[in-house]
Image 1 (cartoon, rainbow, N blue to C red):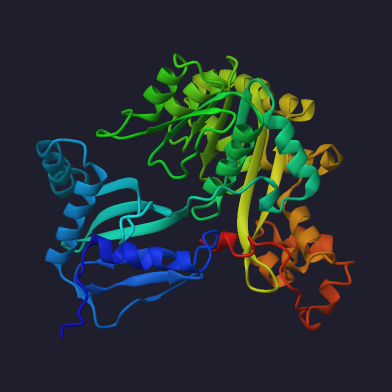
Image 2 (tube, rainbow, N blue to C red; image 1 turned 90 degrees about the vertical axis):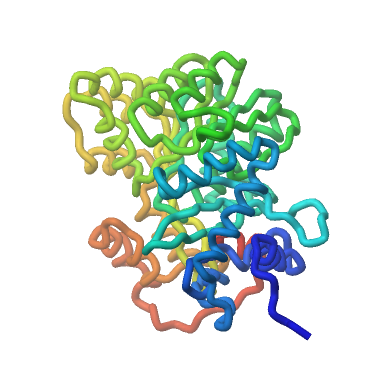
Length: 422
């Protein structure tokens, strides 16, 4: 009897799908790494480790799996077009992004989606799959401070303006974006258009009508810019942009946010001040003044976030938030301003809804009501961008003077204790 498994695309889907027996809301196996002539690696509960020491994928194995993935993803297009996609991967682009549902072994309805990247490496190919849960969190599930949850809900009810979610890769931006769209979908009768590369979270119509469009040469729209311009002719109320990567996309987003639409987008920036400066720097100097005026008029909110482990070793969200305020608008239209000026303005307007990162970290360190939300001083220092200021904020705190006190073990208060582990 041969117990060697058949190594194909379904085999790897089965590995990722096996966690559905645990809890459909939790992600245990978050990422799968396949490489030609190497072992299979899987990220389990945040730790990358070999999946099966005995299985080494050959170059041919990887090519066969890539062919299966393309056949599955693009099952409704002609074979000649699929051949073009594979040929472009091999000879031109050298990489390919997509998202897809992970097929179940028994043919039942898929539980998970995956964001997938195919890459060329050392003469062979690799594949990385990241699991995306199909369950959408609510804003309340994100465990923000209550006042900020209410501010976000209020901003999402506005008729027009720009909302940005920023952070490093893997900081949970897509999850936060999905929670915001879910809030609109549950509470308002609106037309929401998402433009993504690739589509991650699928939303089903609730009170709102959802139109998903994927960017790519063989998908729904060619570029983000063209997708946004087309969206303006498709009767939208809300436009979600997967990522603002260039000045053309940013300009289209700003124009949409000033013409009666809510625009939500992500950026790979580390804090609110850097986000503003990065947006302005996308444009040539002769357009800077106009961009600043557009931001001053249209910017509703920036949420810049990071993930950090709580005292029980589970990931939770820490963040900073900048909201629409005359002080920010006045700053934006000045000829010159600095990151520090933005930080200082945020710190001075906390009673009106703003929150710099270090003040969020301080509140998490000093948390006593819910230990699932409590972090250590050491964890905070690993992710702050101003350790000196954080130390100053904490110097009079009893917490920092007792870092060796025993850890408290509290039963989790939420079914989503593991939600950020992917």
